[in-house]
Amino acid sequence: MSNNNQKRIAVFPGSFDPFTIGHEALVRRTIGLFDEIIIALGTNSNKHYMFSIEQRMKWIQDVFADMPNVSVKSFSGLTIDFCKQNNAPYIIRGVRTSTDFEFEKAIAQMNRALSNIETIFIMPLPEHSAINSTIIRDIIRNNGDASMFLPKGITFNK
Image (cartoon, rainbow, N blue to C red):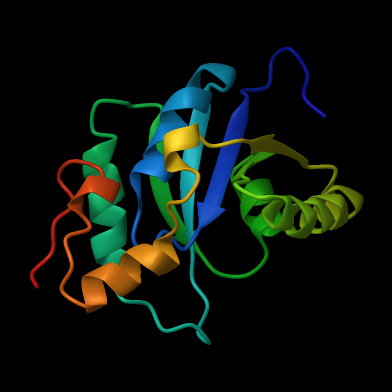
């Protein structure tokens, strides 16, 4: 899809509620493959988020303040439409398990059929493979200390 003059822009979509050290590591590991990565916070009116979109965006902007080629935007609707609006021919997805892979593969194949956008699958570092936002939210909700699973600078009031 890309030619030599086109910037290699990738979108890393998710709700990132909250953004974890696994998400951070994935972006830092893949930035060398792309000219720019847009971390895209999807919004879904049917979902109830623990943290506001503004809070999540600020946290992620702070985490990547040292990386001008990483930006944060929010969107609603189809990820492929967001990719087209941002001239991004690639989607980055982390896959921790075979279940993740099968689910993400089906979405990637549909996205490719609809848009010609390529999905790049990245495996987490072994030490991050058990980390997921749902578990982190449960730790936080129950007043546990989730700080070891969150990037430096992401804090919240208990």
